[in-house]
Every structure is written in C-alpha cells, then in structure tokens.
Length: 251
Image (tube, rainbow, N blue to C red; front, side, top):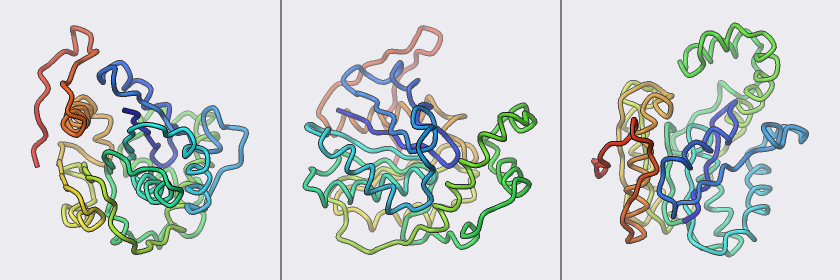
C-alpha cells in the first residue's frame, strides 16, 4: 500500500519521511514534493492549483500500478482531493482512502483573503497565528528569506482554488481536525458529501498543527484505517521509548 503524502502550505513533503519508521512495513510512505521546494527547489513555484494537480497526476499516474492512499494536511488536503479526481480522470483506480487533515471541505472553502500576495510582515503574522513554526525559526532571518516565498505562493494557491462539483469519490474519506483549530466541525463534516463510500471524522487535541503535536496518535489512526481497508494486521516499527498500543479510531 503506497501512502502518498502531500505537504501543507509553506512546507516540504519530506516531513513525512519520518513516518516510514513508525508505520508497518507494508505501508510504503511516499512524500509527494511540489515544485519549488525540497528536492524540486530548482523548479518554479506554482500558484495555480489546477496546473499543479495536472502536473502531479501526470507524474504519478504511470507509477500507480497497485493500491495507494492519499494524505494531505491543510492546503495539501485540498490538493489530495483534486489529485484523486485527476487520477480517476486518467483512468487510474481510486485510492483506497483519501485522508484529509486540517482543512475545510472543498465545497465550503473561502480563500478570498489569499487572492493577493501578502507582505513578509503579513506572512509572519499568519505563521504566528497558526502556531506551527517555532519562535527560533521565526527569528532566523536567513531561514525566513527562503521560506516566505514558498508560503506566499501557497497562499496564492489557496486564493486561486475554485471548487467544482463532481460525482463523489468512490472511496472512503477519513478526515482529521484539531479541537482548537479555527476550522470548525461543520466545515469538516462537509467532506462527507465528497464520497459515495464511508466517512470518518476524528477530532484530535490541538490547534491547526496537531499534525506535529499529535503526530503519534494521527499515525496510529492512519495505520488502523489502512489495515481495516486492506484486511491486514497492523504492526509497529516504533523504538521502545515510543511503543504503545494502537487503538481503533473513534468516529
């Protein structure tokens, strides 16, 4: 089972590489890097979500010769949703599960405040509000010089996103939200309309970046969901100091 993981705004997909040490060996974690960051730093940043999805679908479509799942956090969840449709349009089978984390359902998104480029100061305020960037990183001028253009492009992509109603995805949709995130339960529940399969909503403690603060719990629930979907038993790669019993997800 390939687990294709898409980054959040301003981030690199290589964040997910650490998941390989925790998830069972039958789950092949594949970070999906976007142009302009990480190993694709030399490519131009994208601000058009439809162009990005078309590019990713073209790159990934020929590689998906077996079962796969999609995971995305924040903007990555919306791109994962569009990528699922883009792959279906190319004749690729549906993902086993679409995991959407920390994002309103596409049909209820309002990206109007992101339609124009933000200044460095405004971007820094957003980073502080989201509570996902350590203070030492925010105070590192060199780091911010490289990070802010990526974040600015991703926010423009949020502003350029336009929802298109289509036939619901023929796969389960599993949504994660943070209990203290600005994204409310109703906006998370609205993902239900995007699937003709089962729908699961898990609320975890934390703000928008519960993907960091509740990482172990999040990974556990992803592992359980994929195991149930695949009819497999679950196993662990955790070191002794991180071992704990996996628990089924609560709906």
